[in-house]
View 1 (cartoon, rainbow, N blue to C red):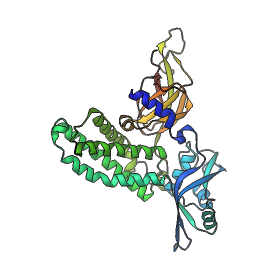
View 2 (spheres, rainbow, N blue to C red):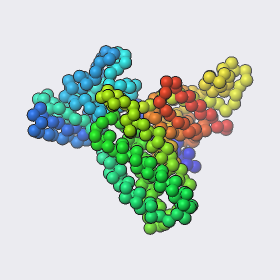
View 3 (tube, helix red, strand yellow):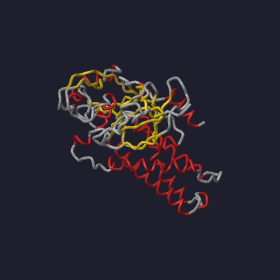
View 4 (cartoon, rainbow, N blue to C red):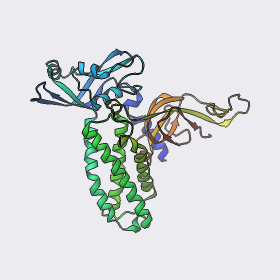
Length: 361
């Protein structure tokens, strides 16, 4: 029942950024600073249009942003990476056609930019505000959790396990909050949605445990919190900045892994020649035309809506580092058509192959 509901939500509510690339940036906060630094103007909830430009290999995008009045910090690069999902650094490795933000609306904003004001962008402004509010609430939730009797967790060891998991989530979220506040690293919209979802789940589980109803920890709540803790661990290197200390490396996008996803029939045909271990589906038929969905593990256990890939199977995508569930449905159908597979995405040179096996009728 739950999986059918997940599939229906995937078809109806998948984020637009995954259904098709948006050529505009929404919910952008624009802070304009005068050349003399004595005047600041703020434009909230701005939709930023884009311009396509040709960029030579190795060209610094700082110049392209500055030429358009945009301060080239991590937030500006977050906007550029959102518009150009295949771009993996502030200097393209090869010549490319890229989309760059252009501040030409509203008219007053464009006039100020033309007169020399420098624009500091903050993408996903409302989402980042909500994340910051939830991060500030975590210490109080942790303190309340410590007062819950052990028997409502199933014992002392179980309570210690949950407190450790929540502590891992808090530590990672505080580090992420400092990065958001300090504008030090680009964060993708998808990653921010995951952080927000994990905070939502953590808040909900602790509230149920500490609320007046005296609820005990359910198996589902335990799975969700442990999944959020595992996700925090998988991202830990990024937050503690072990990916480099130079300005350019700090402007790189969040690490990703290349994932190739195939839908395979349940039956292996011995007469097929492609039954080698390194062949997709390894002797079974690779089925094209199914819609592939995914959700980070914590969000899956927390019943949050999934994401849907824009292309039908087989699918090749770059995904943020993390732990996910993946499955497929037939187009225009709500029932899950394949096994639900847990996938660990890590940075690496070789693509990760995921095979979703069709369920037998």
